[in-house]
Image 1 (cartoon, rainbow, N blue to C red):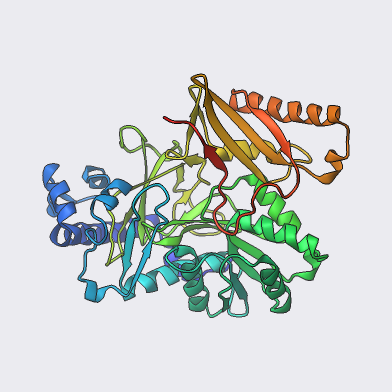
Image 2 (image 1 turned 60 degrees about the vertical axis):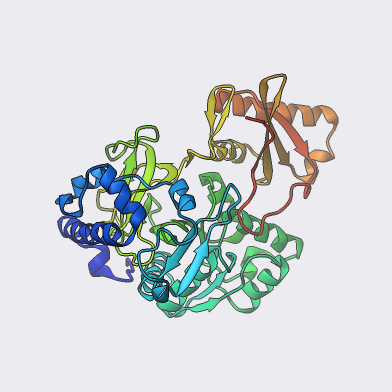
Length: 434
């Protein structure tokens, strides 16, 4: 039997859901116009007033918000309430530029916990569950977001944070953990260390895992499920919008349900920002319609996916987004070919004996882009002769060329030579000076 956290909301009719969205959208637009000078200026430049938003179709008349807008107003220029009403601040890592800072009111924190509770229930979690949160705590939104959701559900929240993998495994076994939240690459790390310590998946009571914060393929899902003996669920979120739990898969795993009573999703053309029809791949754009502290209008996530607004087999009526195929800002253009790291991962994991530990190195030699893929392989292959290794490398490079239409040099490396991830995996090293 299907389980719900809030069945009336999760299964409401599309017409009622759209009425709620419009009312909340109108309130949010009025709020940012009156309280966020940056938005007021952008709307005035487009000749738009809050009263012009009469239907959901008017959403596309509003200006797009980008990460650069958040950097331009650093640190608190996009906050819509006084700092006295802010109870928490999170921030992005700032690895590619100045940090983006997000503020939350008490109501925002409650909304976030509600979203995460819905997600955990989709994995059949309940008050009897024990949820180990192995996302990082701190300014990163992952840890605390999952933690508050587990507590909202009434489950036991175990704030393990990331790192110290042997200790993570001890807790998994000794505490009888039933659900784990972490990045998919760290789940693979846990599975690897579990085996090295002499344990098997039968030593665990895990039922499911809630994995996000980085792109991961269907092939990696299969690997995680096989090694840990669980159902692996995809969760989506980003710090600018809220954190994890903007959307999540149900047990049918046919797209991630977006909580549309809190967020309005669009798919737009990455170049023109014009809306696309459901089913067409493009840039996911999200408008928050319930946030008080840091509301965003038409935020360009740069995640490439599609939308499906048809009711799901699980009974939920909220739109489903496809698993992101990649990001427009991590897309590699190599010799004129668009390549997403997730595409390379899918090819690698479709080949027998290839381990999910790999690194993509892009360089430019004599004005020509080069693509090298370093892959760890099992000990058994290293005991083979050199010719066998060469044959295996050619097999992998041939598959890459066949699927992606671009040549790549494949370099097999010793097991454990690629650094393990305790958070987001660093898959790409781009040495080009572009």
